[in-house]
Length: 217
Length: 45
Image (tube, rainbow over all chains, first blue to last red; front, side):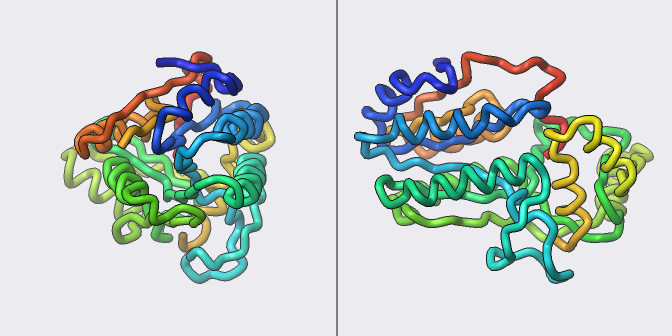
């Protein structure tokens, strides 16, 4: 079925008859201005229901790490991009709402799916190509979320779902070449390219990518 | 357990549907009625 993102009554009617709501919505890349209103409408629709709300987030709210150590959940939250700041504010709102409602926040790494994402001839990479980055396979992320939902044990908590061992851009390129037998290239988008894209399209949140890839996340 | 997946037509949503159905949950898929133009859909992350 389909619903308008700000249809509070429609969502409330649905939530009233359910045990759990998993929110996997994102937003159009060129405009995140409506995202907070969408989540606010969802929180309003939850009032008076017993549905366990599971909000799926990413790591943009960490922004630029203060140290060169790999990112972990104790890192300060310093979002620098528009998207990161919006995500951070939304999480703050949800943490307030946790006092009145069963809510779990799940933060995921950048994800990929071999079965739906065709292997391209060129891989895009942000930041230093030799710096390892961690990804998560979408089916693994979905399985983790299902386990977190099971039994309501994670209500009122924030969970970080990690992926397998980190991999660098050059290692990923070599792996893609070995798997596909095609000479896959690595296109590195450095600070200047990212800054130009950010200037032209600030809501894209590409600067978040540089912060994440430019440090050992 | 009855579960609603918001964003069920997205990349993660589609896998959530499969996973929850495989776990024998009673799943309701909800997609937005306002579909964004193709060029605004995620191309990274």
